[in-house]
Length: 474
Length: 95
Image (cartoon, rainbow over all chains, first blue to last red; front, side, top):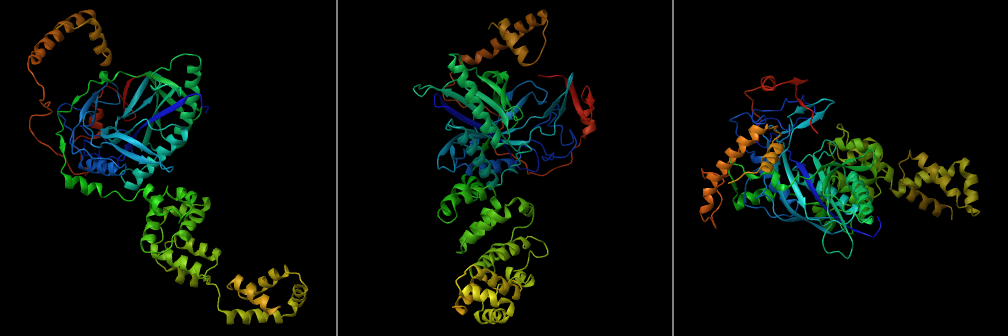
């Protein structure tokens, strides 16, 4: 990006809440792998006389999500109808919270420390899914009124990286709070990115384009970079950017015009008469708010100077790993070695399938770290024990028990080691090496250490053996 | 209150209706009468009056998050639509 124009970015994100049932009807909310229209009730069909009934769990999750964006919860909120005519909505309107949303102002703290303000967040029902064919379209209503929390940011982002970081941090915070499955591939979080450009000296923001339905952090970043180029070319020519909705294609790396944005009043918002308002008691809100656990920003402060920042950023994508580290830290035990095992062993490509297994307990990991620190386990042996702890048949064992079973405990006892060293030195096959070493060829020491290791069946501590050999060959 | 032809056309577009000229004339008259009737409310001073969202004064009505058996199954619901294909509702091409 050049510096000719300043870019201003605001993001709306639809988060699918992980309730068992839909927002307004008692049918299964999880339609993954299910047949079209199999998770649908007469309410979703909007048959005459059908009335929506609010799902209490969605209200609770919205409060917890509010806590995960440091937001104030509005005790009073209501629902409204947003009218539009399209086959994905049998009702002819979407039930949303236009005038009185449940979540008020808040913020998301980026890894850089910058705070992106949240304008508000509101509950609403999703629309159905359309599949288009040559001469007709097919409608699947399974997704109708799946509960969504729409989170609206202020236009506080000013680069593609910041837009990506915001989306990722929002995803982390929502998954830490446990309000969504956060499965991006299946559209559990969808981002609409508003982008406008202006000259640095202009005080007014430029006309914005909205890029709809991005479902990965990478596409958010790429779409912003593309829009910067597209809009700056228009402005360079002295023309005006059109306010419109655009779609993004990962395949072509381009955004394309979808439709001119309908005027807000065309939605003919009106209060939803079928749903009584919410007037939530302070203790009810507090009980849900307090269920929000520690967030990535909290962990950055907690582990500052303890876990290297780049390792920590990798681990922060995994709430479960951070919880375990926090548990070890709370018990007053060191976390650096365990963090290193997580980042370099568990998250190595060949071991990532272990993430599906049960994570070893805090006390197991602490014991493993202690054994490594006391040199009872070599670095390689410690990694082996760590990986084996994920196997169901070993999962309940202590690392010491498991290391003994696998014959991996390192021999550190100096008397034992000296006896082995003596045995090796007495072997005529090593005489030449001993003479070479004494004559100043220090590299030969490696060969001798190797012989001792072999004699000890790999259990001797090589550093200790090396010291003993040096003394004996003086 | 006068409803313009333009407003009728706009409403028809939002609702995806195709209206014949005589229907437009009739709607113009009917809607005009409805607006006139409702605009009586403009005579009242409603400064500081909360809009009426509902008349029963209920609040915090919600249900537990439990799946219940529906009394209408998929086939019964699909049978209500004009046309279906592969368990989906078939509609004229949109967009």
